[in-house]
Length: 415
Image 1: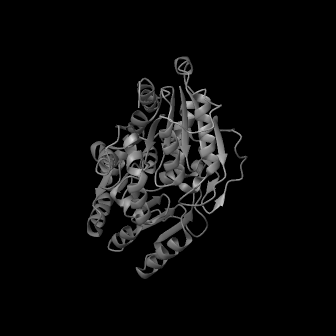
Image 2: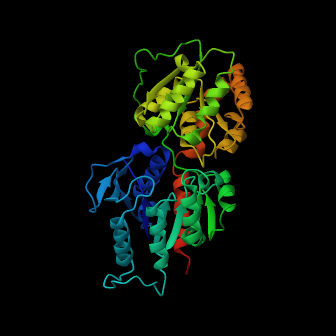
Image 3: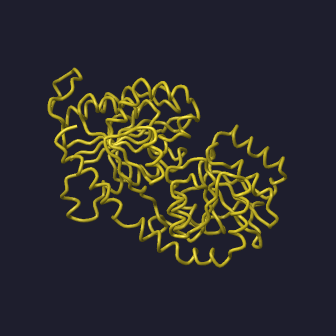
């Protein structure tokens, strides 16, 4: 069985945040079988991606496959930048791989195969970009099975946010039929509910993201830059994610401005300069700027130690299909406060690993106050969360669930 992963961006384009980590972690886990049984399963994995790195391009070899942390990756130039990522080279490369797998290399046209190839699966990550949509179209033309991981891109919020007219047009002209052709992979029950409100796919499977835990990442002590040292007596909050509108930082700022406790907020992450500037202006207008430390993007090796230094991770997003940072924070024992629109909010509530708020300033303020005053609960989470996370998200359990999904599709006789 061959699996071709399609992603508009890939390592080392860390500027795109959590999705890059999730896709790479999955590919690396499958490409590096942990035992003889998995090695004999015959999974051949390859990644096709572009040189996308925000406004710039990655400095990597193109077209010819290279190994990236044990994964065979082919990078292709893109003709357009975020958020379209049009790459004719990638589409042509995908076509060649399909023909190679179906032993139809001499055919220069693109007819639909008479007998679908049950041993080839295309796994596409994210939606609303031309790499994903057109790759899906190519796969459909050849009758190849497609797994789509929307990565939060199939929700009411995503449809109405940023170029909503273009998305609606694309969805009406071609997107809806392509999505109905796909087998959908959702990362949480909340994302599944969101997806089913928009389309009815061939099937939908819920499997959480694979997340790097502290035991899997070399530990490096993180030192806060001079002048930004945390006060030992204050309630230390941290936001660690890509800085963009959907993260709800404006709501968080309004809420913490109402708190009557001593607090500090560390904001770690990157984003568009114009938007970060607007947030800093808002912080100044609310007289919060002296309590907020903007430290920029933090490396994988440093972020775990940084989170461990804080009392609470906050993520009051308008929409999150999963939120890797929630698992990462809990893996070092730091409790979380998340909005009820974060995919992992059900898990946090069920396991009692933090606090859940509505997208309401007063409720966010109330939950922050509850977290501050309930020192006993925070201490309990600090002690128990790491083991809970290792049990639920560590080891090969999740990897095997992905392999079972692929094998189930490869055994289907038709599409």
